[in-house]
Length: 271
Image (tube, rainbow, N blue to C red):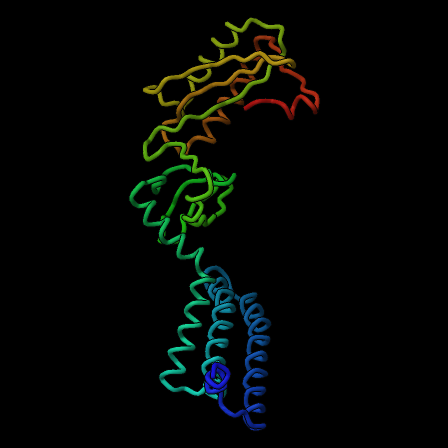
C-alpha cells in the first residue's frame, strides 16, 4: 500500500520526457557556464558600482536558472494533483526547515538582541576574535567594520554560544590601554609621572574621565599600562598611537631603557 502511494506520485516517464529533461538540464548548465565567463569579462570593462553589480548577477542568475529548471522538470515527473502537491510541499518544507534551522535561530537571536541590547549601532564589539564598530543591525546578522575597514557580518546566532565584548556599551566613553615594557633599572615614580603627563597633553584625551598608570613587575622587566579615554571612541587607534609615539620619545629623553624581550618571554607577556 505504501509502495503504491509512493509510485502514485510519479508519472510514467517516456523516452521523449527523458530527452526533454536532458535538454533542460544541458541548457541550464550551458547558461550557467556562459554566465560565469561572460559576466566577469563584462565586469572587467566597467568600474565602480556597475562592475560590482554585474559580478553580483552571477549567483543570482544561477539561482534563477535552477528554480526555472526545477519548475519545468517537476511537472514532467510528478503527478501534480492536490494530494501529491501537499505531500511534496510538506516534505520540502521539512527539509528546508531543517536546512535553515541556524537561519531561524539567528532570527530569534536578533529579536532577543533588540530586547537585551548586547550591541547597538556605534558600539565597538568583539565577537570570536573579530573587533569592530557596529554599523547596522539586521534581522539575521550584525554588520561591523573592523579597524582595517573590512565589513564583517556576524550572525545573531553567536549570542547563544560566544562571548560578546562591548567596549563602550552604548556610551561615548571607551577605555584604551597603552602598553610600555621597560628594563627594570629605573625610577617607577618618574616613569609614571612622565606617562601621566604624556596622556594629559594628548589632543585626543577625554579629561572628564579618569587616567591611570598601572605598574606590574615581570621577570623580564616592568610592564606599564596607561588606561585613559579618547574624546570619541572612533579615535581610539589614533589615541593609542599618539600615546605610544610621544611616550617612547619622552622615556628615551629621560634615559630610560626599554626591555629587550626574548622570544619565550614575548609570548608570555600579559596584556
